Length: 318
Image 1: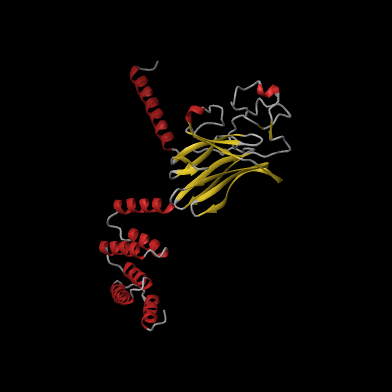
Image 2: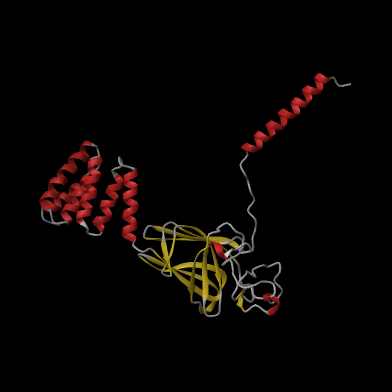
């Protein structure tokens, strides 16, 4: 017969063992096996000015199926209004994968994810920075592109139009060459915009993402970053060099002086000399250049290339 003392010890051992097991389990990394999916995941990113735009989606294949077409009456009976018919478990042989006039996830598996780092214009309409599910309502002559505030949904089964952040219209284009796997591309790209092209089968649907004023946005970001890091001399120097590349000498000098005020270095002094020279202020440039070389030598920086440049300045070769 087991004594109460031994039973108590046995129970305590079990409790301790379970606690240890839970502790060990908690320390184990969450390892997952990536599933093999017929529609594989893809992501594409484009920077517009200083704004990153990212589309993450899954790529279904045509597989000799009908992709874009009117839904037959039997299919229409399964959904009211623009509700999605994008359910492979209910789809019958011969029915289109993407029926017209119904919400489509614009991809496969999880909802297509559209991420934008800053406020933008989509086909001229404002869209706030953030994450959105990207849906579409295809039509023969016109598509509706939807940016919805529920980025975590699966497909479009729980899509709620009340959560739409933006809807824009787009004109589909018929392409002779068929695209087997769904694809998103950014093309063409300009300094302040990019055209997104949804391409599948013989259809291409473009819409434009635009940053209203790249330079104003860039300056706002730069000012905020410099204000948050007042002891960093590299940040204002970077801004100075950007303005110098744009031949805005006044702003370039303003920011290079801000960098020097934080900390004098060979790098920012030589940058100021170059800016002054390019601005036509040659005597000042040579004076600052000599100071830059002296600072570089004191800090044991390699100044050879800059010294050669200064020698060419003084010899009138530049």
